[in-house]
Image 1: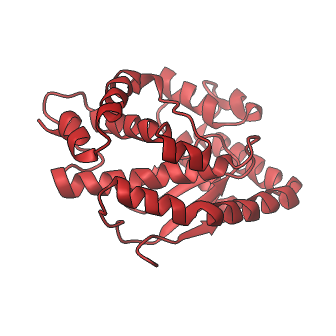
Image 2: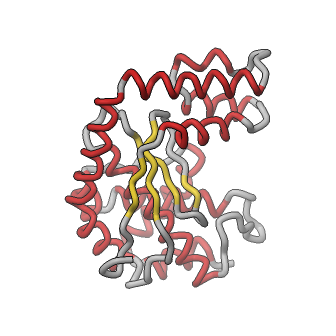
Image 3: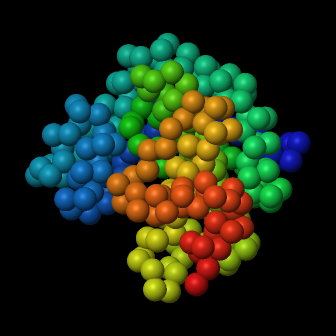
Length: 239
């Protein structure tokens, strides 16, 4: 932790990228998981979904695809990786200052933050490990910055609600659906991504997941009235 905000260790590693892709493939297949994987995997790998391909074959195909893609596009991917580090360096202080004020000077959770570049199309995070993924090859310029900022905001959100409400990432709030806290976290991020000072920094627009639109709409209306997380979270998290 430097200057009261985290330094992100950016990682370029094709094997780590493949490991994480294989991890998603290990989930039991269902209509929802297949739809998710179609968004996550490149078109060239969609044929392995919902097929008779064994787990071992799927893993081999994904690992071979990843190694081949990195080998064929090494110069481009490494250039994008270095550009991402430079782009993030140009906004990180303004971002961390903004988040610090947003969370009423709540300190960033301790830990070593790692951002891992990925050629795949979804960018998960692991709250306890302080690990997240960001795009190496997205067609939108500086899109990686938006992903990094989004995931870092989740780290702060979950630390804040743990300290203030005793809620962990997988906590179930009585009377709420099992994934309610996840919905609140994603709705909150979308609200902040549409908030003028944040939006100006990243040229961002709110794009809430379909599952969280209802919460997002109510939360955004409240944020328009009172831009204060204490009152906001009091409405959506207190039971």
